[in-house]
Amino acid sequence: MAAKTIIQGVYEEVLKRNPGEVEFHQAVKEVLDSLEPVLDKHPEYVEARILDRIVEPERQLMFRVPWQDDKGNIQVNRGFRFEFNSALGPYKGGLRFHPTVNAGILKFLGFEQIFKNSLTTLPMGGGKGGSDFDPKGKSDNEVMRFCQSFMTELFRHIGPNTDVPAGDIGVGGREIGFMFGQYKRLRNEFTGVLTGKALNWGGSLIRPEATGYGCVYFAEEMLKTRGESFKGKICTVSGSGNVAQYTVEKLNQLGAKAVTLSDSNGTIHDPNGIDAEKLAFVLELKNIRRGRIKEYADKYKVQYLDGKRPWGIKCDCAFPSATQNEVNEEDAKTLLKNGCMLVAEGANMPSTPEAIEQYLEKKILYGPAKAANAGGVATSGLEMSQNAMMMSWSREEVDKKLHNIMIAIHKQCFDAAEEYGEPGNLMMGANIAGFVKVADAMLDQGVV
Ligand code: NDP
Image (cartoon, rainbow, N blue to C red; front, side, top):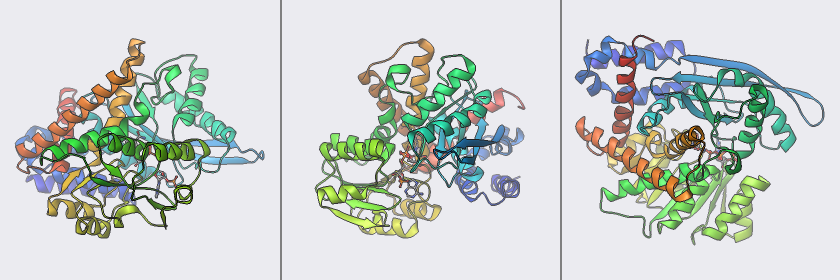
C-alpha cells in the first residue's frame, strides 16, 4: 500500500478514536504528514504498525482531585496523566494547570513530547499531564492543598524510573515543591521523581532558564545557516511566564532587542527594549506578586495593547512563548509583511497549520516547537542525571551542555530535512529525526 494511503488510514482512526480532540488531531497530522518519505524508505515500520501504535498512549489516567478552599468549601477538579511512549526511557513531560486543560490538549502535548524527547538524545520517553485547576487568584495555601490532593493519586503511577513529571503552564517552582513534598511523604523516599525542583533540594542550575535560553540558542543556529546573528535584531516575544522571561534574557545577552511581552489580557510594546532592569521587574511581577503585564506599561510609560497579541509589531524575529495556536494565518501574514525572517517556537504548537504554511512558503527560518523548545526537557534530563549520581553540576557546566544539545538538535533536524529531500524545512526534519529513533527502539522491543 502507498505510504500516503497508510498515513491517511492511521489519521482517520485517530479521528474516530479521539472525537472532538482537535489539538491532538492537529499535532498528529503535522507529524504524520512529514513521514511519507520515511515509510517509503522503511517498509519495516509499516509491517510493525509503528504509526498505529505511536498515536495511541500506552496508558491514560484520569482522576478526581477534591480539595478545600480557604473558605472551607469543597472544590473538585480533574487530574490527568498520559503516559504516551516509553520506548526511549521513563515517561517524561510536564504538568499543566490551566482551566482549558482537557484530554485533547494533554494528548497533543504528550504526543509532541515523544519526538521532542527523542531529539534531545537523552533517554526519555514521552508523557504529559495536568489539571483544569486554575492557580490564578488562589492563595498559596489553596495551591498547596490542591497540589497535595493531586499527588495523592498521581504518586502511585510515577517514579524516578517510571514517569518523571515537570512543570508547564501554571506549574512552576511553587507547585513542584508542594507536589514533591507530598510524594516524599507518601512514599517515604527522597528521589528525583519530579524535575524543576529548587536548587537546595535536588534541582538543577539553569533549569528555570533552560527552555527560553535553549530556544534562543536554537534560533542562533538557524540564523547562522544564513550568515546572520542576533546583533541588533528586533524581537517580539509573547507570554510573560517562564519561557518568555528567559527568552528575553538570552536575547539581550546576544545583542538583540526584545520589545514585547504579553499575557492573556494584552501586550506591552517597549521600543527601547526590555533590558535587564525591566526584566527583573517582570520576574518580580509575574513570579512573586503574580500580577498582570499591564503594570509594566504603567510603570515604564509604554504602549499597552489591550486584548492583543504581539504579532502586529514590526520585528526581525518572533518568539511565540505563551500557548497553542496563538499565531494564526493572518498573524503570520502580518509578520511576513513586516519583514520577519525567523519564527522560533518557545510555546508548544503556537502556530496554526495555516500559519506554518505561510512560513514554509516564504522560506523564512522556522524553528518548530518540538525542536526549538526542547531545551527545557533536556535540562530536566540533566537534572535526572545529577539526582541519580547524587551530585550537582555548576551553572557553566549545565549551560554548556544545554547549548551543545541545542546545537545537536538543530543539526539533526537540518540533516534529516536534507536527507529526505526538503532542505531547510526544520519542521519536517524535526518530525523525521525524532520519529526514526523512537520507531527503531519500538522495533527492537517487539510488539509491546
Ligand atoms: P507560564 O505559566 O510560566 O506562562 C504562561 C504565559 O503564557 C503567561 O504569560 C500566560 O498569561 C500566557 N498564556 C497562557 N495561556 C494563554 C492563553 N490561552 N492565551 C494567552 N496567553 C496565555 O508557562 P510557561 O512559560 O512554562 O509555558 C509557556 C509555553 O511554553 C507553553 O506552551 C508550554 O507548554 C511551553 N513550554 C514550556 C516549557 C517549560 O519548561 N516551562 C518547556 C517547553 C515548552 P496568563 O498569566 O494571563 O495566563
